[in-house]
Length: 159
Image 1 (cartoon, rainbow, N blue to C red):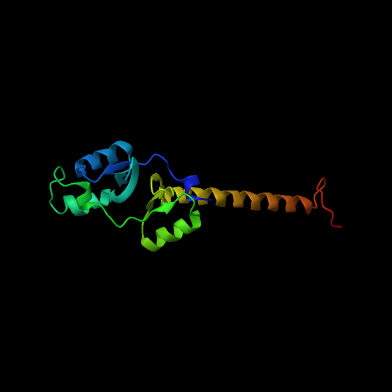
Image 2: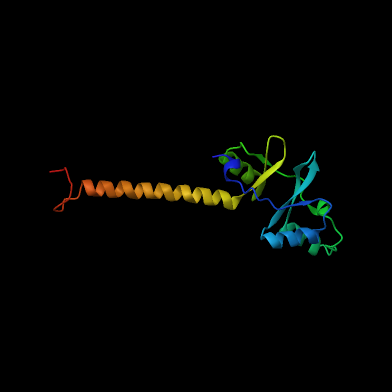
């Protein structure tokens, strides 16, 4: 499965020049723990960084900085890991693990922001796959038990 097939296309984003207060209000409105900071290039939104609720607490609140004055670009994480829509989810998970991130913006070949893929999305995907495997094992066990059921009316072929 590819990143572009399971990413969330409704990305909450901000611009670097917006205040941290604006970003925090957007995070609250959309119930997200992170926003993607974007730059506009040729009419396209290109990821430039990320701002998390933890960044706001650690860098702004705990730093006793006025959140209404400081800009997203001043506190965002500029070392942004992105993945392409065509990247396989196993490779994306490896990258996320190596870099210690829970969310990655998904970009098109043009560099434009197309979605976001969170660890929760991957867990949901894998949980569904594990449930399918478990159902297969259960069906196989029941089939085998029915084949070897020695009770009357059973379909055992063993004498």
